[in-house]
Length: 451
Image (cartoon, rainbow, N blue to C red; front, side, top):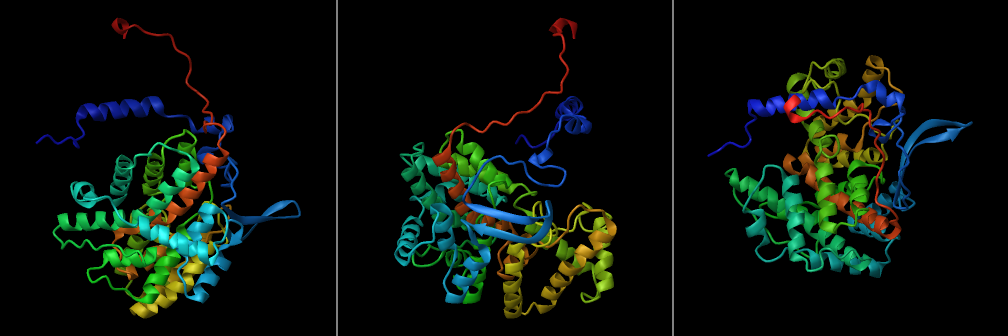
């Protein structure tokens, strides 16, 4: 059988040719005042649009100057801490309520929330034989590819797939919000079965929350503790939305502005989130800590921890990338409010799981890493733990396989993507088309015979 993944010498030569003729002088970006990554030298994003869905605050103006502050995150104007505190204290699950707020712009009443739960439960089912014909037929080791493929395939089951009227898009978004957890878990089960493990395909329950259904579908015995379900629910809330400028959400705006269908739009967002610079950070954190634990004889020795962290920065440890994964954020500097909230629950779950020593190691690294980074590097802003620093640890304590870490991010972010897609459709004026300046000199054409 032909190996189409093999890179031939001819392809190597073409790649070399591409590299030679497509490399832009870095000085040109400064010369033409181009904001690489659509961010300035201070990491502040170029304003590309307006939104009412969420707000991220990392600095405040003091005496005419922007000064870093404790990170703040608002969903539809409400501080994330207030939302979390309310549903946590009342003992209810918060993701569905958060999704309603993000998508429809207001906190639901009791009746609205009950109706929304009913709608999600109603749609929490896949077309007949979809698992057999789509999920099981071509299992992939990459769950994000499986998600994107399945979402695109769902368009074939929708007689109004291309209808971008608001009521129809709301229907499609609610449907995808309901079934994305099913597709993610079933895709993993199909992959695990292909790898020689037992196959478990449990039916979802309409009366359970999204978090409860994920654990039910994933585990052989469908069992879970209340604390496990509530912490997974919290993770979904904290990952549900993070401004219009993050890569996958901006992708949602860009693709929506072209007038394409919901399934294509969400598949594009999934492709963006799959990138390791965006959605795969918590996997890197988890693997970094596995390497750290294997190389530290005493997890409480802070001098040894510091030495390991310096080794990371000097490209001597783990993947030699020179990074301490989970530390720092493109926007936040002093603190990431999502990490602050999640930290409290991590302590509870690690106690329930008997992983207090490991939690202490995470806490030590969170405290020591900013000091080591400040000593080793000149940075323009502070560095703190981001939400991915702890989310991977949480998922591991929940016995969630690493293959599902990024898909769970997608399950949560589906709420934010839906909100931004609808916002773009409502306010859409022009197709999003920023300018690129050509720096290639003009050339006279050379006929084939003369080349």
